[in-house]
Length: 520
Image (tube, rainbow, N blue to C red; front, side, top):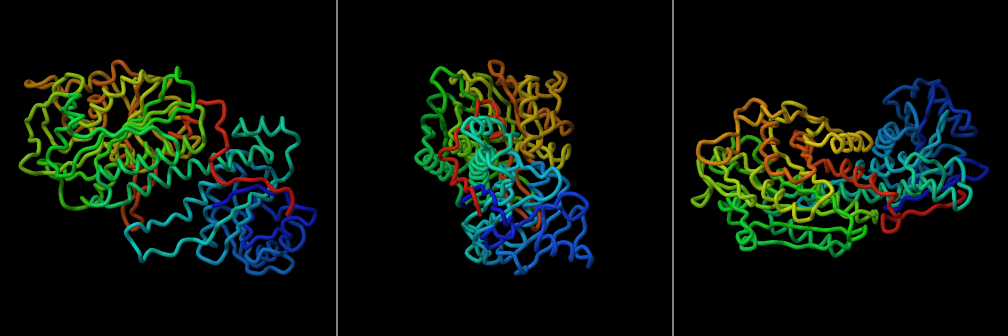
């Protein structure tokens, strides 16, 4: 989809040549800037009781006299901030996405209506979210939206190259240059979110460890990543006994995927992202109940988010070094499967008594965290649909964040708030570690039910003494259940925001089709 900015001519919004015009209305009365036919149409709707200046209000009108756009949608918003704009645009797009509109123009009218770079980014994400349809294994899915082009209408042009450069470096800056940069960044992040959703939505018989490895290689070719895939023998030579213990019950061969984006100098320490890649989780010998087990295809949501974030970071040409590590396998019951009570040796040399084979995510992550040490990383974040206990604690709005580093935790929390992909910090008190003691190994892989998300994080913590580390438990946020069942793409937005906020400013090149037009 093509996104660009446009400064309207003297005739204003009514003269914009688009198939559909979405006007985000601010304030408690018809904005003075909406003069002429658009203002009259909105005033008539208010007088007739068809529109009010409050949350949730929207109005669709077809062929408004004097307006060039054939379709006009009004949506009320509390302000022009990124959060409000994202909600309003999503509502407006929902009204036109199923029709014949190919070109949508978006404008904000009312007091304080100047959109900044963050708002432009939010607009792109809202459009992509509203038009996403999964169809890889569903030929009968609804037809894709015909939207091909989205125009963000600017209040004014930006004066001079210096202003454009300054605007591009600040998400909060305004002007055509800053908006174009925001649109480009939004395109990069939206592509990453879409990739994560596509991977996680695929059923387990399609999205196998081998398929994940193939998609990583494909991403490497298209985005300039260096990708290496270790097979079972490679992992055996390295001593990844914990990862291989989980994989041994399945006929699907395990894959240990390492993908690297080098956007900064070779001497700059990389950020390492580690994603849980259980492409289907039966629970193993400690088998799960049948109800809703189909949703365990989403148990590779952490892996999907790592590949999605690499897609976003590389798409934005970020001046950062990022390494993605994905241990990928299935957790299946068979005559070869690991049993409760078995003891395995991890890559770190520590031994683990496996009391519950359904606590497998931490078993593959611990070897990946040990492997991450070789990159001498600036920070390591692992992402996993790890525990149902985290869902009980936090529900489906916030991901669980665990970290031994206060500064790192603060960065991730701030990134989540800025990206509307929030997390909540959970404790890592040493007392929680006591329940992982074992009479037969250095540690057990589970403790009692109480505090299960915390004890899972404490288990991972035992493998991070040499790392600046954080853990995101996304079991409640990586997918939705019910009639709208499907992957969310979280926490790609959080992770992308975190990485991109650490660099001077991503280059717009390659981040999507974005251009600036001067007049309607």
